[in-house]
Image (tube, rainbow, N blue to C red; front, side, top):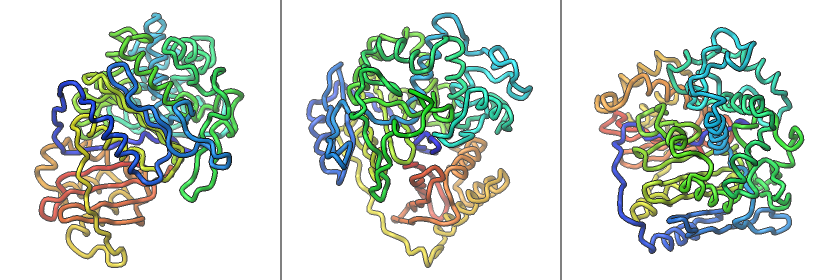
Length: 470
């Protein structure tokens, strides 16, 4: 299944400073209480600060048939968080003098076509090369050579360096390059150069210290056992290249705690390399989050994060360098709204308050659109279902407030609309909810799960927008 970066976009919202003194001890209890109150939560939660674990706890079952409980040592598919480790590996090669961010693909691949020969490693690392998201299914067999041939034949979405489009393909190319320059398989290089120095004993596609029975099963929304990632068709000890290096690494809560320690003590990367990895290089759309090298810089640098999933497994990593704290959570249950939970945990960590829950009221889809705001929502659905730059421009001018257009770059908004168009089916809604000033549209995501789009109104025009892929 296609891998997605499961991001939350806040378009047109002003970033607030969250800096504050040391985290009060009471907040760890607040977090435990909040997670315990979530119905049917299954997965692992790690919260650490000051170099110590505050919470490392499993919830639910890793294998329902055998009643095997989730623990801090259970291995979960961490999805696109894998990209942060691929980027770290590339930075290790840069530290060794084998690479530079400005190196073009033509330096390493003799057969790269003219439209792609000047794509740089920096552009691959920051999703600004114009490459597609995916060119095949996660577990489909494909060699590195065939993967490159297929990629070279794909059209670019834009000229390299002139936009942002999340690309699993770009990270697989980085993995292929890593293998060629190091002379090692991707997993072997990570184990020796990244995981072992960090003390991550069970991290990897197939770590020698990991036991197969500790790998969590995935469960579909109807409860069907999807199986374990290691049960799928792999190329020996690693996946094929549609997934390899861009997603699918297996890690435990304990592994991620050790990764947090490695970050704070510079056990793997030199300080200048870590700064390069976590710098806000490319705007993801809306000016609130920026892609670095395999990590996202948000909240004006206060939160360094990445998340990922495949429609079954989900994982979320949030590091707060200023607070010396980290939150990591993972689940194998497609029904668990993991990213909504970790966003609340973030607010508890930083403020000690649980966000106010919105009292959504269902809208009768048989009567939709029944008023002017719903007509605006219908117009947005039609724009996303039949996307074009012209239709997006028309929607922005006709249905959005002047303030919304003033606060945001129009070209980035159009690009954001195109991303949402590619991510979900907008011809029919799964659900539509409303409050006095908001509408929530829920559509089926093309890669599995749901895309939830919140429209915030001023009068009858949209003034803010938030999208969440679950």
